[in-house]
Amino acid sequence: MYLKRNGKLIFLIVVLAVALLAAGCGGKQQAQQEAKPAPSGEKVIKIGFIGPLTGDVKTFGESTKNGFLLAIEQAGGKVGDYKIEYEIADDRNDATEAVNVATKLITQDKVKAIVGSVTSKCSIPISKVANDNKVVQISPTSTNPKLTVDEGKRKEYVFRACFIDPFQGTVAAKFALDNLKLKTAAVLYDQGNDYTIGLANYFKEAFEKGGGKVLAFESYAQNDTDFSAVLTKIAKLNPDILYLPDYYQKVSLIGKQAREKGIKAVFLGGDGWDSKDLDFATMEGGYFTNHYSADDPRPEVKTWVEQYKAKYNETPDALATLAYDATKLLLNAIKTANSDDPAKIKDALQATSSFPTVSGKITYDKDGNPIKSAAILQIKGGKQVYVDTVSP
Ligand code: PHE
Image (cartoon, rainbow, N blue to C red; front, side, top):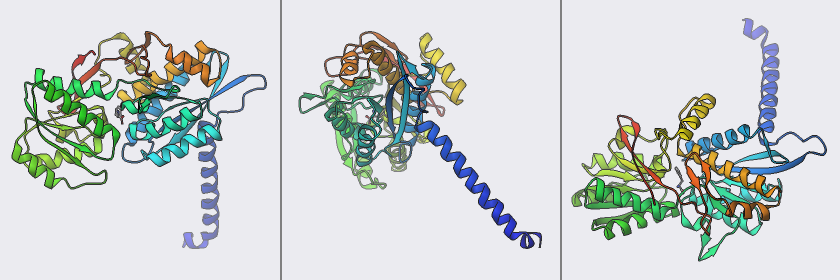
């Protein structure tokens, strides 16, 4: 009765509330995406961030965004004589969308540098846009070599804060052979993703070189969800290792089906496993190569973990850490160049030497790749457990 009599009023209140809420949210988003106009006279530098904030690897986007924002916050929103303004963009882990948002950041928002993206499959197409437009790009996490060098040509404006996959694949192969003393492997990878193709091949090469045998080298398409045919084949071969170089959602799915087929192999993988949304029960006992471990006793890691926890209430993963490191590398280069000219910023970045970051000291080789060590982690008791550090 009450509702009926006051229907109109309630309707009005609801409409008003929704409108207010929408205005509130919009305002907040705007505050985050468009930095406030600087008081006249103040110099401003615009930086873009790109990550998969939605889609199949969204924990990657969330973590990297957190790391990026914390680095800017700790810098007091300033670098040298410049006030930092930033734009956040979501590529949904889709290569076409990645190019679209990068183009918008460069042509409309006029960013001088981009931190991003996360996955190689998005960062590689972005790198072409950034380099052609002479805008600096630093990917925190994209490990495929093609990011900075394509067909022998260095993309001078493009850098990364992480090691590259020839190293990562070799570390995994050596660990399997030398530490686990396992001699046979099956490899299963996504045939439409540069990251997983690369890692599969680098692993195979190093594993065979070290005296191991790859019994099966099989691939699937990106949208596949049923792996029974290929897993039946692998089960018959009974490999010691099943190498799964893909992202957390896919490896969790494959791992589950592999166990259902009775495959007893030790699961082994790469940095793509690093997510709180990995299926820890399924992947129990497995090992993966990564960029850092929160259990590393180095003091800079301890401080970082504390600061991150204080702000976001969780332990930073490698993605958050690398995004923080990448942003600091970029800010350091802007400060050193004392300019917002991307040509000068990229020269300063290239000249970076022994710059201390959480994930290690960074010196760039001629291809814009840092030489860094890898951490080996195990999934044990529903957690990531630090096993070893391997230096190049
Ligand atoms: N290395 C992955 C790629 O190139 C991205 C990634 C890095 C994912 C670190 C998780 C952790 O696509």
